[in-house]
Length: 203
Picture 1: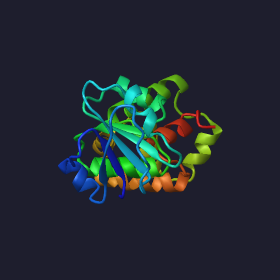
Picture 2: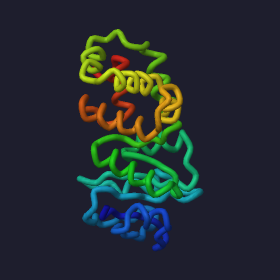
Picture 3: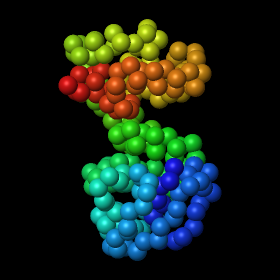
């Protein structure tokens, strides 16, 4: 990934280097514009004590996705940065494989909100809308195998990959493989969109 990591220090953290070996750290100061580079994603580090309203606005440019790397992420901050126009928010020190997954989701037009908040949002959606019953949901599920339907319904109910794996007595990597197939067959981008479609809110 030839992306930009925007920070107030020109220091590449080990997890960034492992996830994005071709990325460059670009120095910024609060309020100053940063010229766009070649990558699709601008990873912006939000240090403890910094306000996203001071840091993010100068970074938005056409054709770029903004992902916030937060030193102190919490649900309120994630929702705030998404409302401000960012495509995602994760921990500054997230594992390399998580950063790569964030990039994949964002580059494909999805939003990254983190597993815990995503489960809360999906669970709330399921409770408000009720399970199944929508014609579109039924036609969507008809595209899937029986096991994929099981996985899709559990995702729509807010279950994590581990919870799905435990309930179905399969490996987490198998759950991920089913989800990949589900996304491809249904044309949805991520778990949240899948949940909305199944629960009848994605029409």
